[in-house]
Length: 223
Image (cartoon, rainbow, N blue to C red; front, top):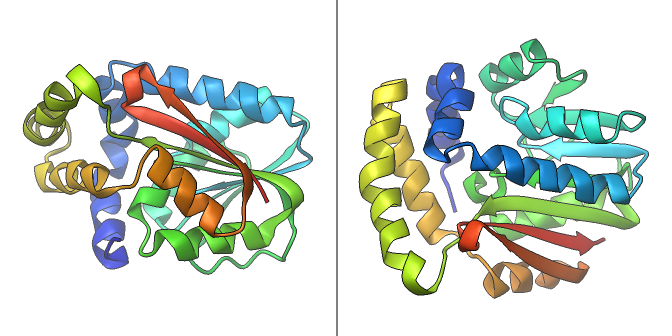
């Protein structure tokens, strides 16, 4: 669980270099992950999509391409991030605290959150609030980092905690923010633990799709 004031301040400081830094740190793999999300959401044929914790709009832009006829709202609690999302072409943005959203009950068919649930103050409460705004039978999709098992475990841990913050510090001047982000990944439930957490909030048909050897995962569920 995270301190929302610290998280907001950290993301405000790295907003200008956030997109480039993410692509460098993942060697562009994050682009492929979002394209996969786009294909999954397109198959659901949603009328209304809410992208929570949209940041600078990477996933929202992919969803606009994949689902051009859907009404998509991209929300985030960091105005600096949303300013970049708008400049990059996200059509509808709204400053929103995901823990207490101003949207009506049952107001979207699909709710997505990419690399954002991990930064929220209470994972379970956030998932419950998300379920409130998803129509019955609609879908939740969470894309986030996870912890790989087996031979990738130790090398990934070294990269995540020792290498990544240094590289990101050079690119953004904010090594401390990325040290926090690296630590948050290690503390975040993944795999079956995340599936159980989602199920506990009343979702059904919960699935987990590991990506790139398990360094990220896509979780889907029905509200």
